[in-house]
Image 1 (cartoon, rainbow, N blue to C red):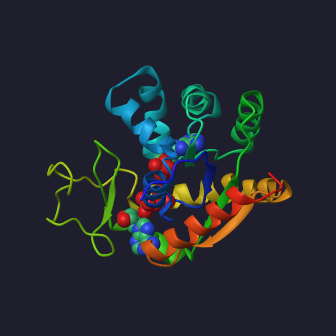
Image 2: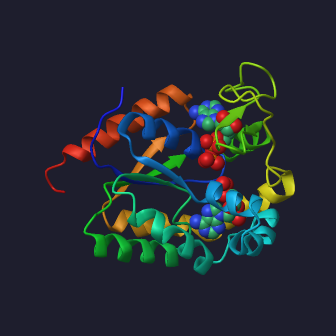
Image 3: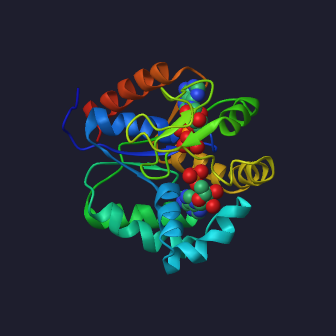
Amino acid sequence: MSVSREVRVVFLGPPGAGKGTQARLLDERFGARAISTGDLLRRHRRERTVLGLEAQSYMEAGKLVPDALVLAMMEGEIATSPSFVLDGFPRTQGQARALDGILERLGRPLDAVVLFELPRARLLERLLGRWTNPRSGRVYHEKFAPPQVAGLDDDDGLPLEQRSDDRAEAIERRLAEYDAITAELIPYYEARGLLRRIDAALGVDEVSAELFALVERDERSPTR
Ligand code: ADP
Ligand code: AMP
């Protein structure tokens, strides 16, 4: 069932925590457009745009793409979407401050920042078993969320791929970037009263039940 209302949520959490999976479910449920910076950057890379070519080496190495590139790409996406879930953005304090400025100018405050929490060992098993449809961004897991036919997407029937940065070395770098840079956003949003924590170690349906309840609670909050 889809519910129509404005929802503006940021997903925060390490790679592999299940943000992309839940962003799509929130999109289906609330019509909040799932905007994944990773998916957008990968599309630029595939289409060999200037931005994609500039971002490529950072992504391959598991490093964050510089703020200026990410912001140039995101500003228009946010301005044209009154209802959204941001998956993988912001990832630095500079991006978070820029997002605050954009939303203030638009007069559209955030409802909540959802922090996906789960133990490190679980992240590795999720990332190493992830398969993606590069055309739609839909993700599967060989053990936890397998496609109907191994290696093929349920929707378009075409081959799934493993991301080039879902290899041990790049994963290590991405987790280190998260710890050193992105995790600083936890106190940033906590201080603004926006942070909500969810137990991302649960199954997909349990996580989304927790998430939907949280979004509905925030939506009704009289303090907003
Ligand atoms: P993120 O966007 O945070 O990097 P994904 O949504 O791509 O994470 O999920 C990473 C992997 O874990 C995917 O293979 C996905 O199918 C799987 N996954 C997502 N949520 C769960 C869950 N709650 N339980 C088990 N596996 C999950
Ligand atoms: P993701 O799909 O979210 O795992 O992102 C894949 C890669 O894209 C990251 O490892 C970064 O190289 C890059 N990336 C995605 N989002 C951002 C962001 N907000 N800031 C900087 N780099 C990003």
